[in-house]
Length: 186
Image 1: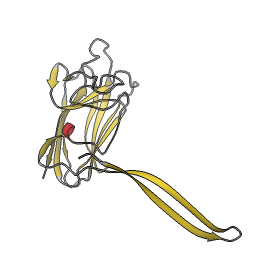
Image 2: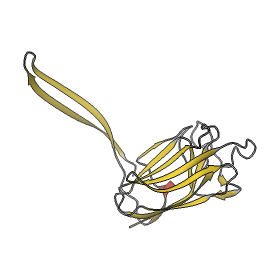
Image 3: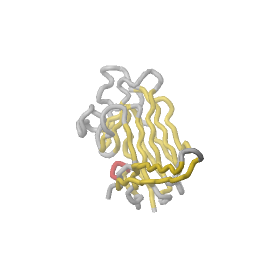
C-alpha cells in the first residue's frame, strides 16, 4: 500500500493588548508513509516516502529517459545490464521509510549508458544516508567508469535517503543508475 496523503489543521487563538482576540488556522499537507519493507527486497519494489528528480520522474527498473514517465531503457552501466533498480538524473533524491526494520542496503551505482559514450559526458556522485547520516558514498563517477558497489549499514534507521548530485560540471547527461538496490529487513 502506498503512503497516504492527509492535511493537518492547526489553530491558535490568543488575546493581545489593543487588538483583542486573534485567531489563526493553518493547513499543512503531510504524507503518512507506507508500512516499512520486510525480508530481503529490491528497493525499486518499495514505494518511496518522497522523491525528486532533476529531469522527469524517478524511473523504476529502467533508466531515466526524459520528462514522460516510463520512457527509459534498460539500466546499463558501462555495458552491464541490470533488471532491477532506479533511474535518476541529477539532482535527485529518493527517501524510503524503513521504520527501523532494516539492517543493510547494497547497490551498484554508475552513469547510465543511454546517452554515453557518444556524448562523453555525464558525471555524478551517489550518496546513501541513514537518518541523515552518510552511510556510503561513491566518489565521482563518470560515463567511462564501471559500476561501484556501495554497502551501507542502515541498522535501526527510520529513513533511507539516496542522493545523486552533479559531478561539478553541471547536470548535463548526469543520468545516474541505482542498479540492483537490495534492502535486508526483518
